[in-house]
Image (cartoon, rainbow, N blue to C red; front, top):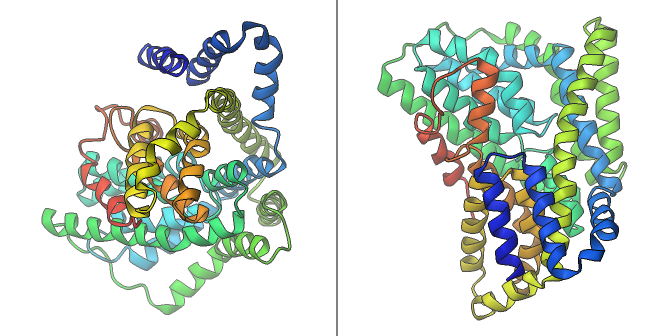
Length: 410
């Protein structure tokens, strides 16, 4: 009864359009009324702050800061220049540039929000000039931003690791191949669209000399992901230290090149604070609801429900994927991860599913939900960043759902 009432309260708040953290906190308060009203002033603050009281979570604002500093120091422009020289001469070149830029940018930031915000306003207008429809250009930009949470460093993976005590380095390594496959699938879809629409090739192969100069200019940004992953995997630094070193590295580069002034640095700090605050308040509220679900023994009941199928790990993965995907369609991605992971992890362990494998599956399914109706948050970010005021881009970006599905492997 308690679980059903909490679900009804949460759903009512979401349908009313109230902020998600208010919906979660109200849901938690209702749950505590069932458990013991006297626990509200004591346990709610304790679980609220306990949900974000983890050293590993300090890596999140540091990686976000690194990405914002990368934008303000114009390293993003150099990455886009390199991407344009690599694939811009192909048919549908600007679409390919869009995807390759997302792959490059994912290696520093790890956030779909940051990817869409940084690239949307820069790439949609040139794509329209090349002959793309506004709908497809916005849809491809929103879809390719999903590579950000897959390729390391990934904010989702850091959250998952903190919830399951899984190695962040193992998760980062496991995300490289799926992320690259996802990028290749988006490029294949873009090539099909460009051929069907009859888009002409623009320009020619730039030549090795020009490509070499562009690669050298973008090298400071290209080596950042290798520093991050290598340092963590080799045990030289923790994820938090890696995030701090990456932010320091980008800041020093921007200062040395004269592209990062005090005003730029302050703007990056403000944007990092805004995004980090939004993520952490949802994490804290989700942790409170997650504690109540554990108190109500929901994970144990879920394990008992799936016990008859425990010898079929592929079936278990398909079921968990479906639940994650549907939940992500109606719930903000961080809260979905925080609520579902403690419930799914015991089931996966009983079925013999590697926790790293489960982490990649959950991350990928939640990211697919970012471009899926009814909420489609990635499309909303794209419309805001590109100044596009048309209806939601979920229908035009329908083909963009396909690459994540192609690359999903149980």
